Image 1 (cartoon, rainbow, N blue to C red):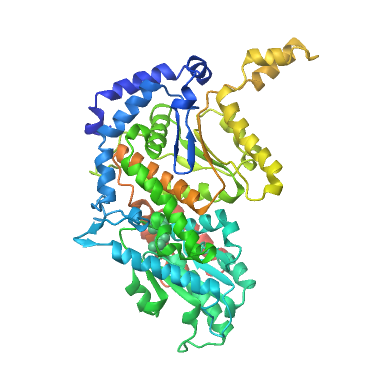
Image 2 (image 1 turned 90 degrees about the vertical axis):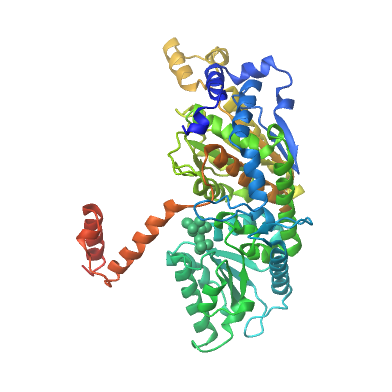
Length: 556
Ligand SMILES: O=P(O)(O)OC[C@H]1O[C@](O)(CO)[C@@H](O)[C@@H]1O
């Protein structure tokens, strides 16, 4: 444990809380406390969070909030909103909150108010989106754009892909959106096979404009476009079909993009926080600029709450400390996100990057090793599908896996309300089953009339007993609107931020991803036979694997 944290007086208190609560069943906590649900739930923006099904009591929660406060969370929160360079390994502020800020205050970075530039880019994104949607923006042959292909990976893909899928009903009047991320050419190949170059627009989304996969896919797209439009390298016209969203406009320009094709953002927008910037252009094209503003407004509402609410009444802080509680004291290695909404099918993947790229670290900001168990594995699938796949392990497996159920209370198509009720019933039932479980005693009563022999009965009861006491949060949201989705995303962004602060991490760099990128460049040269295979450069396993790969592919 870092010195600052290990010396804190309440840590032994938290340990005592754990010792008390690890053997306490939540069923008993509920039966002793008629107001538990009321106390352990809150509404923010349009979201209602019930966190009563957690293995906590007032003392444990109070100590967790003490932990948050003593870690300097309130100061760190203010430092983020006001543009301090909290990303200390890259010397940058972290200002995705400014991208959705609509108030009158300046947000200063290096003595410059960044709000005018943000407003200008917001307007450019809105104008471009509307021009494409209305048909004012035409392709080279004068036809309206029908298909928009976003080429990007990581944060330059996951946010826009998840949001456009989640808000599909709002995107019915706009062009059709497609997302190319993987460098595997089958992805882009399959998408382009069905498209017409004359009516297709590409957005190359890359903060750095150097990402290998994105540049490879962009090159493939441009070749397809030029040949489809009958253009040669020197010809103009492709510019109406290719845009760039980047924090490196000069790199895009060096690749032939003109100013009017480039939508910029800034170094202080992390890739995994970039959907609110020009990286959100495909979202605005899909759902329209007004709905895109609503998305931002939902996030801004959550920002206001996060920035001003006391820690104990603060939704992101509550989720954060609960996560730390299970990770540290119950050694929970993973956390499941279970949206009971097919539209949110990509939310777990989006949150994987947000959370695991931010807090999948063991070194603290000051360079010392963290003695805390830090970022858990984030995973999940929409309900009810997951119920028929992995819930068995959540109910009866070894580990405690805290779950977030995200349930939309209304449905976009009233004629299918009954089916939606099945969905809701399943979400509530799973949370209840996880918490209550089924005891041996209950099973004995249930099976009393069966014709089983005592031995068979004993065996069956052993298998059917469910320990319960498995924690979950339930986030109830009204119909999935842009505003509601904006609030959900910001809620998780701030949760991850709080956990990073408490763990002492820099949540805004991702050095762990770099080594693999460097090695891939060298290995690519070897595969392309531009560099000879050099045993001194690789471990024996990699060397043998590469040699075999080259041989099997016929170049050995
Ligand atoms: O937007 P870029 O610069 O192409 O980067 C794509 C992604 O690659 C990463 O740097 C690392 O995988 C992510 O953080 C980022 O979202």
